[in-house]
Amino acid sequence: MRWWGLCAGVGLLSFTSTTRAQLVDSVAASSFEYYPSADNGDRSGKTQLNVARVSAGLPVPLSDSTTLVMGAAYELIDVHPSSANSFQLQAPKVSFGVIQDFTKRWSAIVVGDVGLASDFAGAVGSDDLLLSLTGIGTYAFSDSIKLGAGVVYDRRSGTLAPLPALLVKWRISERLRVRGFAPVWLNAEYRAARWVDIGVRSTFEGNRFHLGQDWMGVRDVELAYSNLTVGPKVTFNFSEWTHLDVYAVGAVYRRYELFQDDDSFARHRLSPVVAYGARFWVAPSGW
Image (cartoon, rainbow, N blue to C red; front, side, top):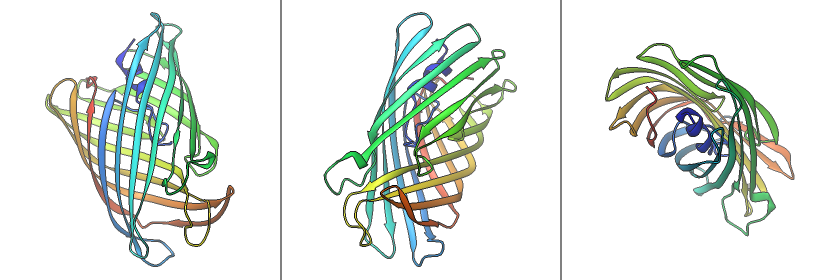
């Protein structure tokens, strides 16, 4: 089984939800991002965010053409509004799926996620449950080009609905490549030296969290957020298996929406900011 397929399968995390479910480039990863205070759109005050994520996965070959993938992920969003008390949103989850090779060129990946997305301020119930499903078919045109298309079915946009998805692996030259799982993440990378890569990263993240306590005078509120970032990154390759990404990104689209009984009653946007992050990941570099 090719490592791209394995890493894609076992790395389904968190955008969370959903990081989502998402196809990533590693078998284990941890990251931290800092978002400076930003205006709350049409509301008064500012909001500052810290985001931490961890994920890990395990491939289990069942045959020459079939691999079972299992993974776990956790996301923590630390929210600091200037006009209210700080609070935390958490999303632990586990993933199970199958990578199936039909021929040398055709394959399919199906992964389901089960977890929770909540502030855990009250008793855990069905409103805290996180479910998502990703299905994608891939075709390898050559060793340098592999494309896939499918759907992600979750509540990333706030409502339970399918989102179209595209898997890309394009090695343009010995030093230049594009890879990703859009809309969740997409990287363009240049190998400047064996120990360092430079590039541009884009991510689209979000989830829908249950708030279990009275929040702004309303009970059983769910908070959905979406976050689109684009910016430069540098990857330090400590070995063929261990890497550190350091990046600064523009958070260009930042939306949050409030639901009660699945009915939206408020929708706002945070102002764009420049955020900073670091991510340590374990997997073959693929160069």
